[in-house]
Length: 209
Image (cartoon, rainbow, N blue to C red; front, side):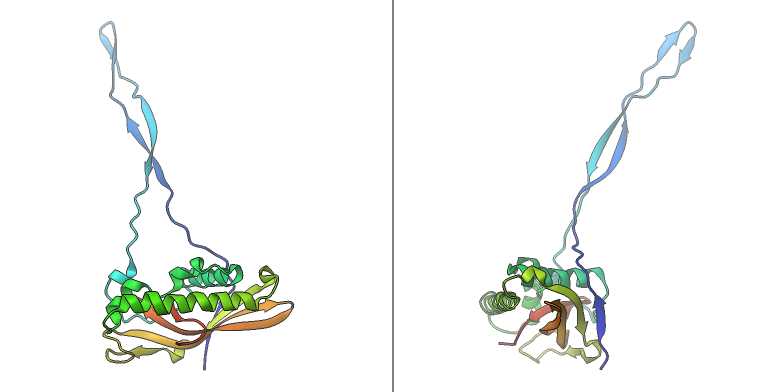
C-alpha cells in the first residue's frame, strides 16, 4: 500500500496585516507671475489603507468530491498544529485541524450533532492529546517531528446512510505522525481523518469511541 510522506514542517500560517500605502493627491493651487501661470505642485500625503480580510468558515459551504492531498499548505499547517499541541499538552493549536462543527452538522444524521460534537468528539480529542503529551516524558520539547504518513490509496468515499450520516466525505484510516525521542524512532496514530472540500481533518486521533 503506498503512502504519502510529508516532510517535517514547523510552518504556521498567519493572516492579517495592513495593505499597501495609497497616495492621495490634495487639492491643487496655482501661483501667477505677471501674465504667465505656474502650474501648481500637488501636495501629497501617504496613508496606510488597512487590508480587508474575510474568513469564511469552510463548514458552512457545500461539500465537494475532491480527494484531499497531503502537500498543500493547509494540511501541513494542520499537522504542525497537531504536533505542537502534543508537545505542549495544549489542544488549542490542533483544533483548526479537527473536523469543523459546521461541517459535522451538515454530514451527521443524528438528532443533536452539536451535543455529540461538544460532549464526545472534542473531549475525546483533547484527552488523546493529553495522553500523547504525557507519553513524551519529562522533556517533551526534546521530541522531534519527522513526518506524517497518510495511506491515500485506502481513502474511501462514504455515502449517505453509512456511519449515521446524511452527507458524504472521504475517509482514511491508519495515518500516523512519526518523530524521534532520545534517539529512538516513535510514532502515534491518527486513527481516522475525513474530508471537507478537499482537505483532510482529524475526527478520531488515538481511537474511535
